[in-house]
Length: 278
Figure 1: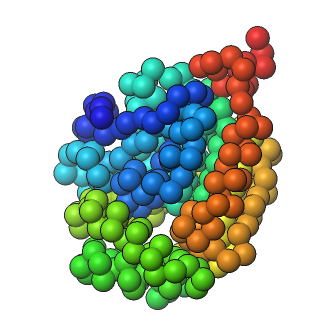
Figure 2 (figure 1 turned 90 degrees about the vertical axis):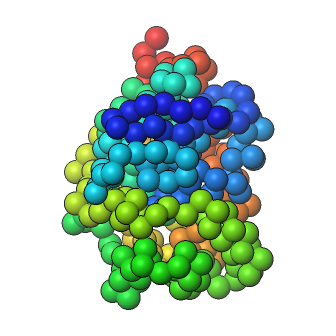
Figure 3 (figure 1 turned 180 degrees about the vertical axis):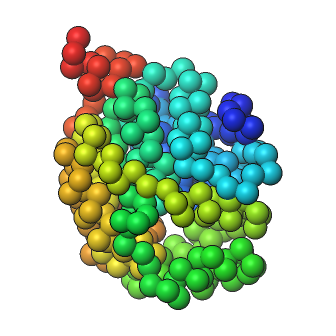
């Protein structure tokens, strides 16, 4: 367990395993504990670095009305500094995928590869969820945490996903649920954010994963991102929704591992671009 101070926040982070560093960035209103289906598998071969975004988990931030995506991308860089890593493979889910895109734009030399899961490139280009789903997203903070998860379930989990898998996720989320202010501060940080014009500048190998049944962040967004990043490949999971790491866990883990193996860096501490120039 460790913390690093960055821009009026005390950012919680930890790491598992050993090897090339892989940073996992979680989504809206979720702590890093929600990587529990992915992190242990990756930690068998990599040093997995997890952090709680400002507004979630054990991270403590000032009373901000908005947690801005570029600041949270800077939090990731601060965690890498604290972990003693010059660069890393970066994996982001949902809001974490937006932070990961911003990190790729702002810190290209610190990026070994990029994996974007169930995310979009920002307004006004993003394909938004239907009105009722968006209203539910904004009203979640005014419901009980358990009720909000159950109301969102039809829009974020595939119909084949069992009650037991959903309940496992719910227990982890409820144990680390943010307060209304921090939830809204994260949500408001996404409203006017975008890196869509900068996506063609991302030069590392990028894997885009998306659930074909995702009603929260429709799959057209994954297709759009993959079409704009030069070295991107897209994998869609037909039976998965937004939480594809739960809906199609084994296939998701397999795709991530294959991508990481294909992008190993032979010189520790260097991004692929820097390593290739030596």
